[in-house]
Each structure stands twice: as C-alpha cells, then as structure tokens.
Image (cartoon, rainbow over all chains, first blue to last red; front, side, top):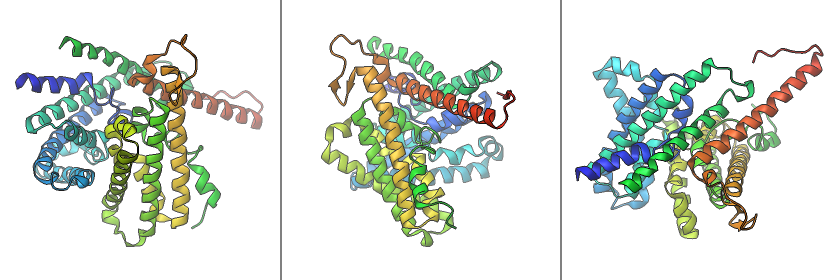
Length: 193
Length: 216
C-alpha cells in the first residue's frame, strides 16, 4: 500500500512531471517564472489547491458522478471554481499574512489546466482517496520543482547577453525543451522499478 | 461602437493576432497533442467548434448576463460545448479520442476561448462574434497543424501516416516526445521574432537613413 502510494507520488512528481512531460500548467510556468521567490509561492499555492481539489474529486466520484456521468466536466469545473473562491475567503479571514503572500495567484489558479487535469486524470485512472491524495501531492511537488528550476535559469539569463530576437517566450521555450529532455532521464526509473 | 470592419474581425485572429504564435494563449493543447498531424487537426477542429458555439451563444444573451457572474457563466457554457465535443469525438473517431485523452476535457480551461468571450463576444453582435470566432479558431487550427506537420515529418518521417522519405530515413524520435513540443514552438517563435525585428529595423532605416542603434 505504502509502496504503491510512494510510486504514484514519485511518478507524478518527476517521471510524468505535470509541466515538463504533460504540458499542464504552462501559463504560470511561462508567466510567473521570472523570480525564484514568486515561483516558490506560486508552487505552494498550487500544492494547496491541488490537494483540496483531489479530496473533492474523490467525493464527487464516489457519491455524485456514478449517477450522472455526462455532468463530469461541468461538475469538476464548477467545484474547482467555487472551491478556489471559498479557500480565498477562508485564508483572508484566518491568515491575512498568508493571503498577502499568495496574492493574485489564488484566483489565477482556477484557470490553470493542471487543476482540471488532475481531476480528469484521477478519474480516468480510477484512483481512490489515498491514491488521489498522493497523486495531488506529487503533481504539486513536480509543478513547484519545474517552476523553481525555470525561475533560477531565467534569473541567470537576465544577466547574460542574449540576442535581442531571443528575449521573451522563444528563449523560455527552448530552456523548457532542455529541462524536459533532462527530465526524460527519470523514465529510466520505470524499468528499474 | 463599430471600429473594425467585418473583414478585420474575421482576419485578425488568423495571423496578425494568432492566438498561439502571437498572443501565446492556449499553449497547453498546442504543445501536448501536436505530435501527429491527425491529432493536431482533431484538436484544432474540436477547439474551433467549442469557440464558435460559445461565442455565438454568449453574444446572443450578452444583455442578460449580470456582470458579477459573467465568468462563471462563460465557463459553464464552454464546459457544455466541450462535453458535446468530447462525446462526439468518442463516438465518431474513437482512436483519436483515445490519443487525445484528457486534453479534450482540458479545452474548457483553454484561456484563448475564455479570452475571446470576455474581450469580444460579450460586447458585440452575434454576427461579429461569429466572424471573430471563425478567425481565431482558424488561426489556432493553422498554428496547431503547422506544429503537428513539423513534428510528425521530422519525428516519424511521415505526414498523416504516409511515409515520406522511405526506409533510409532515421527519424528524430525526440520531436514527437515532450521536449520536441517545446523545441518546435520555441524555434517557430524565435524565427518569427527575428523576422519581425528585421522588418522593424528596415522600416526605421527607411524613415531615417542614419543608422539606428536600437536599445536591444
């Protein structure tokens, strides 16, 4: 049981990294990867929302969706959107410091495809409650890892002499390509495990 | 408040404001499913359908949607159309539906679609919203097909499954794997940026013959 959960976590975090292998959550990956400190915060907010989403999706899958499978997508998106809003209100009330730290990142997460992606994958693979939780934590860890790596590289490119045409998204994508190439090495874990 | 002609509404999204290549919206599907031309076409057409359907619907009831809940309304309309597209693809082309997997569902969070609703369809007549959706959808389809062709030709040596180079060709497998997606879009964007820069510089030279030292 524990080994299975650890495997799900590891697989979501590095082997099938949400950003670098599955292309989920690219908007924050491109948008807020300018500074390491912001990247860490965005990653934290993501882990948080992913975990809560996973719990809600388990509940939906157990009690609601078996009776109305055609409502799957609509149910997920409504739940995620309202969830993020509730979480935002709760944090604002309970911990104003944390609220200031996360700032505009929380509402942005609603339209992050990683969240809906997690919901869909979790359902397609038939994960239960504990497996879903491990999957969400792994996915969050993977997203944070990719964001922080990207931000550290971009901080370095800020200081170096980059050709004018390459400043901007083009360069970010090429860096992402090399990161993604490096992460493919983790696929070797599959045959080892 | 007509500021653009119908022709401009239609053509704007196709190239000059291409959603993927210029505005960098909807990158997730553009990178994730473009490993073959067939997948890219299916994804492009599904997105086209969802965009057109939701633009027309949202523009037709734009007067009755209260401002506070407009985003949720848009998302619900989009999710409904995506469910339709999802089930249709599953019934008509099961193979492609399987290959695209979760990414059909993820059309819901394609920021390009929500962006067009918020920026255009919610403020304009049905006809103009439809033109805008057709243009933007075509631009998305073009960008996806372009990437799909590039990746499939280099990565597998085929086009739509037809072998192009014969058995002597060693495919660049990396192009159909995830890094190839980032690499392809990165190279296309770099080329476009270089061309654009040259154009700007040439125009500046024309206006002012003294050599211009650009800040960059």
